[in-house]
Length: 420
Image: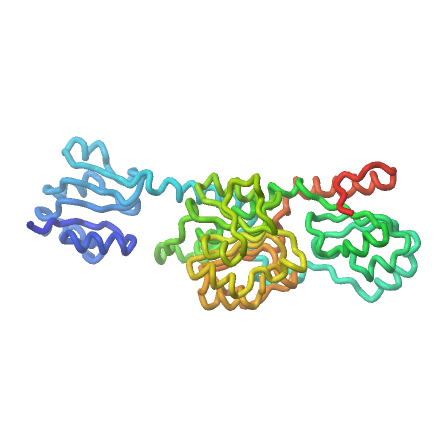
């Protein structure tokens, strides 16, 4: 068959160029500085144009190619093609609908979450080493303060970073309640509180949606390179060339460690992206429709994205170790919105540096606010400063629960969210 001349108007994805090269006589117009002269010399030979929105196929271009039969647009948008004139001249026009719908919709959701939750700003904040500068450090006056006030302090309000350990509890003989400004209780010595008759409350439910939203945001930001794209545009690099292709999110297999309130909320959101869901927990949940795996290694081997959403306990500390990371593999992504010590951090850093996993989205770290500096220069990780529940609305609701539990206790009414 006679070779068919195809005009490619702008550099495109290498896969497409290879396909065109193998089937047609491909002319890359950017290789010909004298465009008008080139078109004149080859006008009778070029029967098709493959274009993108960056090159206008207008009346002038169409008229310069009398043998033109079809314009195949590498885009769903056709604003760069003079459709009316093509119709008048009998030139066929095609585009690429449907196949890009999910990716564009995924990106829209990713941008909404990244914008509202400040994901890229958070990533820059951590990479710049600013998190540790924002942390308040207690001084040596702490012991004097407790000694002077120990008899009058009846309640402690803790959070994810500072709770109530045995030393603090024993230093406050009048302590009656620990009202935690967090759902996690790994910073509270629950056994010692129970032994001493001290009540403990936390803030479940009110932060579930925000944490689940951020988990999805981290998945999208990590797989679609949203923060890296943001840095690329800010650095003025786009005009030097298009950003590299990223990884599709919709349809990826999502494995969740811990199918509690937050894990279930993440699963429901991921389902909306047509993601098959599986999980690991201490025991199988008979009421769950999701596939259960009896070990984290088996779960990691079967999923594309592994999400840590369980409570931090002695059993779940370093639940993500080298064996799990290797099972996840070079095409797998790790998302952590649980607690930093869930992950053996040096092993994860090594895996990211060596590209033994595809990427990670991390909201928490083992020694917050200190983040391994080896991560700052990597493009396959998104770094957030423990902000999963960090919205105005949710923090206000959490604060209301903390105060409500204190008021209930001192009014001798039932606690709103009792733990001990």
